Image 1 (spheres, rainbow, N blue to C red):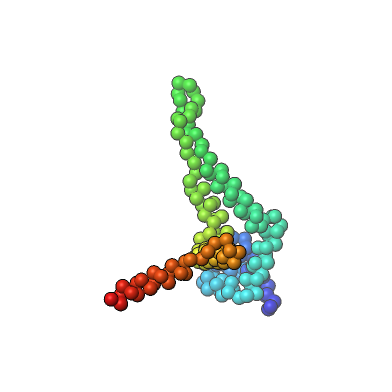
Image 2 (tube, rainbow, N blue to C red):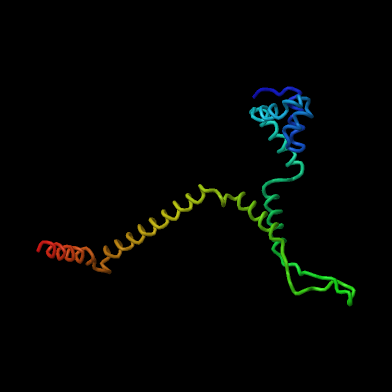
Length: 181
């Protein structure tokens, strides 16, 4: 991979501060007038995007951040947001806050954290729905094959006489006779 120039390295360092590519380009010394286009071109280069990812990974490692940490926090937020909190109002006679008997919870926090968890584990991926459907079809097919094999085993052991084929032939013959007339 091509080595970065000092200006490109500075761009990478500035970019991970706030992830604002235009401002990172300006802070790195590129022209303000063309900073947006320059930043876009810089981020499209493989060596620069690789360096940015390396810097992000180092920062996450230093802070002890990983997917588990994020998912744990999202789960905690979702759980906490779903807890019913009593609604209280000021009672001037008692001189304190008193419960109204109503409860509220943070639906926005619960929804957002649950959505992010779902996205992380791929629940909203259309490919996943197709894969699950294919799996369901395979499971049904496998179950039918198992049932057929079990039936064959019972027939081979002689525990049940197979009259299904004979009955189907008789019904078919009757239908043929009726249609022939």
